[in-house]
Length: 357
Image (cartoon, rainbow, N blue to C red):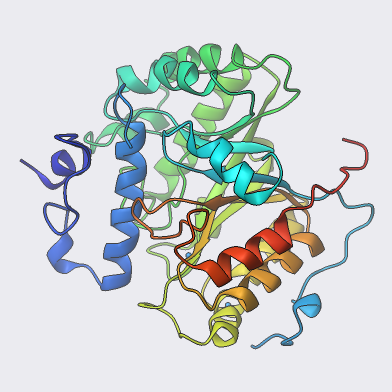
């Protein structure tokens, strides 16, 4: 069984991540952890059965390097819980408020599954929450797929998926779609490293196909924080095909300083960090999003304070906390990191008015 076959297999749930990952022996620890987390994301999305990422900044959390915005709306608060529906109300009860949306993945084991997200739509239709959808750009096992997608060969597949997703929650004015996420790494089949033009054209074909079905779709171009296998700016599909500039980021003691303030400084000013992200988006006149973010220690309160200030001080449409231990041990709602969890509740439990929403 190949590495990706192991990643996507669901024999008694998810296979142990100590075995079978593609290129595992040649990867750094940080790359390996990211691969595991993201492969789990594909695996969670990949079967029609339940399965269950910087010069220094001021140390004051309310001086977190933000750029003041005019009449800014608070970001929508989302959560990732895998495909376990009951974890959404459990998270909300712990937090003391409803979430504004959930991060949902559709399947990507083949073109047929990309074109038919029906199982995932049915799953999330059981609760009354918007979904921030992550739709694979190409399937997991087809290494030629990116070139084919760039040439428009699979536009009919994209349109089939779009029709089904457009019919989900017609009461929502906007349907946020993330595709080709973390393309600047090399752990997904849509990796843009050495294939920048193909990625750009495939992304454009995807967006054009979805827009031909509905004008409610809004598209997130999503970068992974940190060292890149390619320059993300070479992979930008253009303002006409991007509505939201997104970024994923995580704090993990194994790969960053155990000091939260030092770690935050790196998040801000490191290679393709938070500052770069906001500067790039502002230069394009685009709002931003953080579809995945998380922490995994019990001394993360200073990080959370700065993250909250960062969100509040920038044009962020939505942010989604990874409340899961699948691939990244970030679950807070079950008390694993009581101090950090209490800080998250203190900072994020209040539902703020969204002016003009």
